[in-house]
Amino acid sequence: MRRNKFEIVNILLNLIKNGNKLGMPITRLLQMSNLSPQGFKEYYPRILNLKLIREVESGKNRKKVFLTELGKDYVKKSNLIIASLEKLNKEYKLNLEEIRYK
Image 1 (cartoon, rainbow, N blue to C red):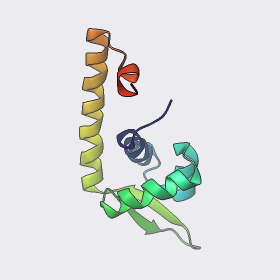
Image 2 (tube, rainbow, N blue to C red):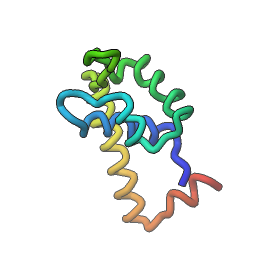
Image 3 (cartoon, rainbow, N blue to C red):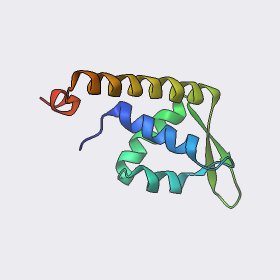
């Protein structure tokens, strides 16, 4: 199944949110996201530039990633949107995947 931009950003941010409180290593984020390295290079700078995440040096040329307050707020609101869409999907027995790609 193909993911849209909203879903990819939401997945990346939720991975960081649910990761270790000491930060998510960038390499681990790439692995867990199931994105190609090229896809990751496309989305990671975007969420960094939007100040949804911040990088912190963790020694030996390594960086860890944390959600900013803006990123935490984005995740909270985007998860509410997704939950609402899933509820509508069940209530009206819609197949949103079929609708999206037609």
